[in-house]
Image (cartoon, rainbow, N blue to C red; front, side, top):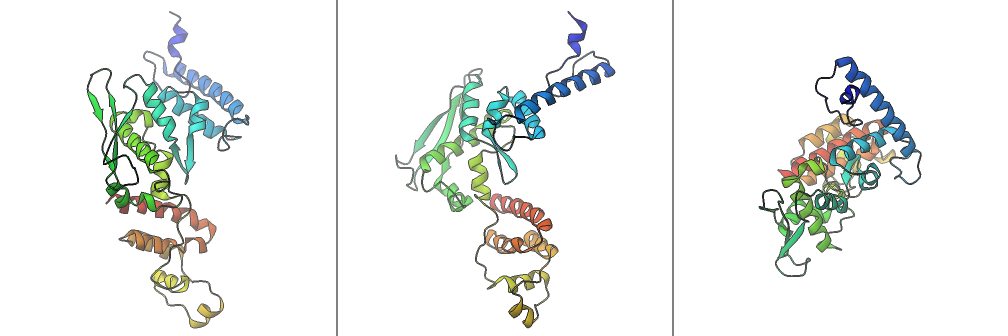
Length: 289
């Protein structure tokens, strides 16, 4: 066997090759990375890849790495790996297709109960597949309307739970099943529908608050009441990014959290991104508690 062949590893896979000298491994890895980078540049220059990858070599390299680990085409990964609220998320159809094509399980099937109408509160759904190696049946958890309502999925901006509940039940059941029985296929990445269920379809909501208006909420966040002339003349609350941060951290309910988030858009742009990320993180924490 050619000795040099033993020093080669799959492009950007990070796999270590036994019995290779350290310098040989470094040289091989540099060569492989350069090759991967040239491939990524070619893909990034194509108008057929999604906009998030056009002209973005770094994003294409990440998609190539994900494709290598799950055994899929980089082009298919780029077509089905979305960026929602700055987070990568799978297309549910792609995740289901990946499970069905992995040859470890039979194709996913769905069991429903509580009638045929998915809009009825008694309806529930779960995903099932057979382990082709062990022969056992892999049964996912039930997705019920009680769970949907408790997590607030149907209330998020852009939610499709009211318009196409039958499809949403199956997508969510497939996501839960994959994380239980084949997490290496999803790589811990949520589906696009799951991300939208948690964070909604847009930015932090401009929800109505118990504080009356932005001025009084800003005063509460800073602990310093606004002068009467400021409240009447400027109409701009004198709150700080630190005050909003503290309010988000201290929030004990989703309502309190969303109240604090309503003023994020009034802060300087340099502060908005970090506070929006904190809002999203806290929503997850409060939703899962």
